[in-house]
Image (cartoon, rainbow, N blue to C red):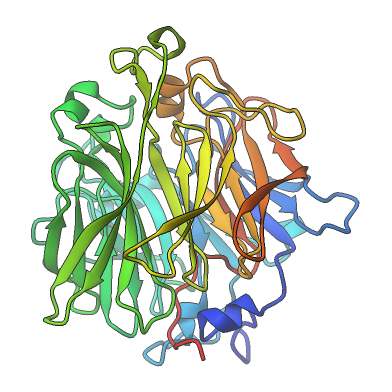
Length: 466
């Protein structure tokens, strides 16, 4: 324990933007067929370094078949909450969930070039203490580590709904379930909160039989994936409102609230509208009467394509859907980045007016039936997927793998893991950095990125920007 708050904890988003820039990234390496162990790659982000843009260290775990996913820190700026008893923690440990194994790894990353496994939590402990399975997303809260899950109990994860459980942020012991009253929530995916306003928002993907072996076309076309978001009284742990976007808005995934805690709005990305194959972004907000409302503020059209160029799953449609699979919001709440994994595009929207986003920049890379190469002439498998923004908002990093079985369905002829970076212009716009291109070791794909010292999808802030 420190004698003073970790210097990477920041009271407000503005202060975080003024902090020193990132030196390293931590990126998931996953084995799609389980033939190798998964790991975390440490990437050098220092432009003046001889090893800039290279993997300089790896933490390879002893088990196989984990499929690492959305990992996170043990502690972050939320520790500065006035209700917290943990202001003197260190942002030291990475909590890494295996979505297929339900195993959780605690990695000590205090010295990035010496990062190592600190503890392994076996799936039996997760099952016994929570009744949940398939841990998916990690968020550091003021009183502990929150872990969302995609499965309930039983072998196929459908014995009861999935939810969130909490871990001790010092011992990493599993404490128990979060929910006291889940209301209509019966599926899960992402979640995030506004600490001073005491609310949480969660979203929905599908249950394990709907995603583990790939997308189930019959379920998608009959609108059986998630299409609602849920608002919670954070401390009462109670669902206070469920908002259904409409059953055709299939797979309401990433939740991105405004970073400034005085603001009561945020965004949610929807993978596909089954009526027209569009991707969509909804803006949600709290009205004057205290109820939550939403409006579709961004639509992204599919691209017509010769069926012969499409994977079997899409040939009947004669088009490439955008497949909005990740979104991320800059710390100044100005730019929303939207990964169109199917089209092979990364979009940048100016959301200074969250009800009227404006497209400000775009990068084309990869994509179904397109396969746009990097500006350095090298291949980029699949399309832009997990996206992470530097604290100062000047660099945007992304990788390419969505989920192993889905990769294989939508991109049956692709293979590989890449990580790239684009620079952000003074007045918006995105330009790929030709010198930053990482090709991951053979047989491994790349997913979630975390930046040393925090990033735009890690920290929640407790005080307004001044």
